[in-house]
Length: 99
Image (cartoon, rainbow, N blue to C red):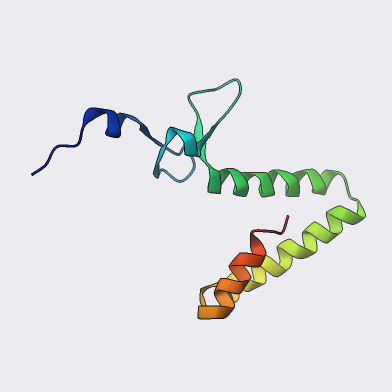
């Protein structure tokens, strides 16, 4: 049995969204609540959810385009295409660059 140095375990914090442990440099802190840390992947997901909610209340052509992208994203996930070898890798790569 090995014991990890105290500084390594203390520097890893839990994401308040997914619960995974991350180093402090990979967490985003909320302004008025610095105790809340969200990992970068969850922060991206939250940004998409916030933008979708904003678009619901402020319909614009850009909002409709983002809704269409989200509908396609949901269909790809529902059909499991994002988990298919080369096609899945390509779809995940494209998804990183979409709103």
